[in-house]
Image (cartoon, each protein chain N blue to C red):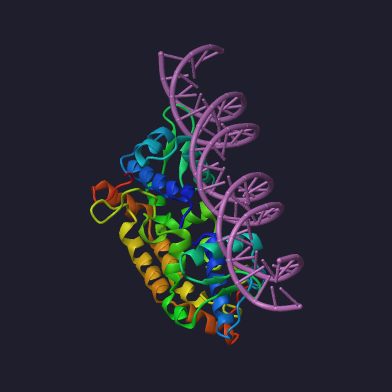
Length: 144
Length: 144
DNA sequence: CGAATAAAGGACATTTTTATCCTATTAATA
DNA sequence: TATTAATAGGATAAAAATGTCCTTTATTCG
């Protein structure tokens, strides 16, 4: 469904949000450790998220990554997915046709649109805050 | 969502079904032409489908691929997806955790289960016959 | 200012996916 | 039986995704 990069990106963002709730900045090393991801690869992904203004980075000692409280509400999963995987998942044809729409649909078009609309709605309506709080109270996990 | 191999596999199977409705066997070359896919790669995928008894192959002159009328009803998309992409799409965690279930869910688990259940239902209930007939009457397309 | 710390980013390596090429096998038919 | 047409399958190549390493840049703090 999502690329590895995107999976790491979402997990990282949720972890950063969790820590930012306590006012703590976190380093790439800590993030990679806590979400069980390869450090350097995770660093690249964090760069992308930072460039897309999804997370905030600070260089130097005491630096690291953080997310402002307001951003935790306004940043929805679809923004992270789009920043990393692009919009193929929202736009592309399920059977890989370059052109596939209601005019000239692939055999699966209508059924796919339904699924994708649901997926899209879910991603657009899920905020980092929502996911971070589930983690905070120990209901959910980011590794294993 | 699906791998390229799986996309080609579904398109190829639908095309074979379409032709088999007229009692015509089709060659790899014709299939690749009609679904706009790389020939040799498509041949590999057809081998997989054949080994999984999803389509039937005949060697030699007048040979080619075909699907029996009864199989067009019994073969559902989920069987093709499973034969080519395995069951990651049904089983795997949306955020890539090795272990993710109701006991120890990732932050997206519940929302993901909903989407995936819908996708799974759709694939399990869609037969090759259904897709081939849409093509036959010119409502849908396999290339472009 | 200098040392230390952390992200940014470029270059490279590995792995997986996608794609191609060539030979072997099978079967029809002239 | 020889030829030819078709799939089967092994080996290899190319491209994309994933992952690593090292240098640069920014910042803090002694």
